[in-house]
Length: 189
Image (cartoon, rainbow, N blue to C red; front, side):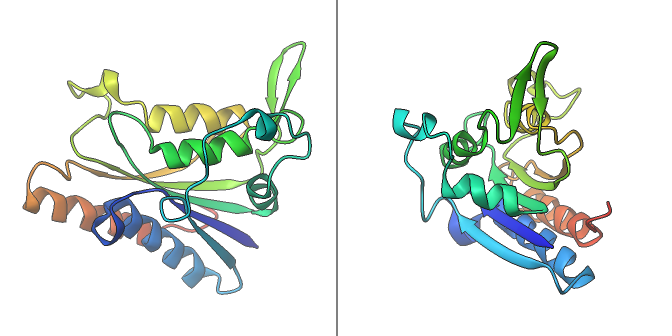
């Protein structure tokens, strides 16, 4: 089984999403030591923004090939200015390819990557969940759910660390809770 681990936070060692995504990968590999892990640091090795030559390439990119070869995807993302980091968006732009991860039909688009299991470690400075005052401006989790659904991945697993910019105590508790949740995950989850 192949696992693709993506980190996109620009915060390095101070990143909550990196800590949680690492905990997810640790739990999955502890449950199945035969899992082959490939790690991509999209902040340290950033992809350029989408260009016409990339968009028009019918064979796709190395990032697409890596995505297609993976059975499990673990994504670490902080929410910046209400959405995902631009580094992660640049990666997504290389993975959403007509004829490879989705196709258009007379009935509408059809995802072609639904057999993959996806885990997302998402860190948010405030509280943006359903029922929260700022829920309407949350475009990280909602965007990732939409994009993954478009390629056929209907039920990604989100592990949230929320309120991490409130104060040090809230941050520590949020990260510890998310890491604990991550530790219980399995590929079958």
